[in-house]
Length: 374
Image (cartoon, rainbow, N blue to C red; front, side, top):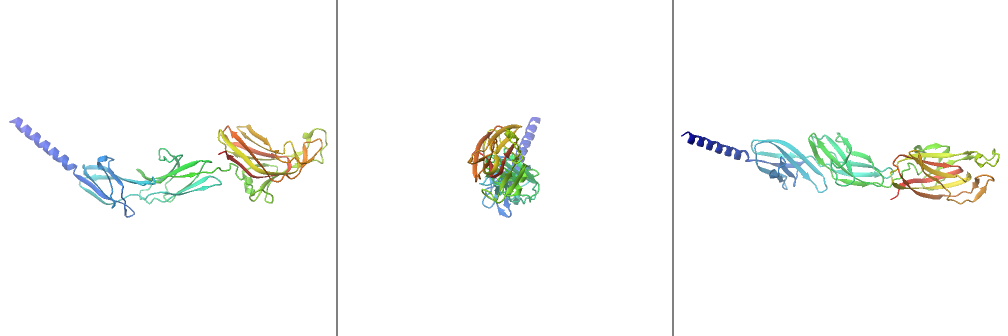
């Protein structure tokens, strides 16, 4: 008799347990996804990231997920676009009965609208539209060398908590293509990611102010001697740099030692960044006139790590002129504008200090460039 009673009680418990499980999973979560009052079609919706609780919104932005168990869950919504951007948001829900959301709001898409490049400096300015999400926390701007760009592969370039701060200027390296992407975050993670846009930098002149168009171009240089911008004599643009030397032939006593001729030498120097094992070309236009030291009329060279890497004397002009007896000096006829170019290789990425020196009455230099060999 006791055994029969025990079986009866167990049967009732099993029946009750089965009914409770069936009832607890017989709930649905449904609703409409919108942005600024517009339904979002083809958005994915899931509960707790589970495939059995995953669906897609229809053309009216409507979704429904059925047979969900009672209790606390996370409702995840996401819309991905063909341009690689996406928006998403998660909601904590408590399920005790069927849930219907008349209007679940997704954040507005944030897209990179433009990238402008300053060709004189290779500075790229990235601009994007504003996020109007109520729980906005910050923008994060990332860069990468390829389009496979997310928060794990990219380099973080900029963070701002100001929703109105929607642009950033980034210095690019010469001859590089860089991809950019903006992510929008709230306190719990990503609200969205922008499209991915790239910009290619140009082969920028590494010599700042090498056009010598105005006096400001000399601010980049360390000067020694009589050096100024000449806005009346130039090859192109609006000016050139004029290096004027003073060579005293009147008070010199010729003694057979030619090095004793008094000479005021001019020098210009500037620091430039070179890369290891990279080929560069230095080029410029120049013009010489007047009395000068023909052994070292016009030189350029540079140092890295306190070692001389390149030293070149420019002789590419007509030697016509009158020699001063027993000396290396002569009176040059005006050479007119001449072009010089030389390719060299850098074996270090240490800062290079580039120098120009002259021992000629008048030397003009214009269009001075150091560029990467493409």
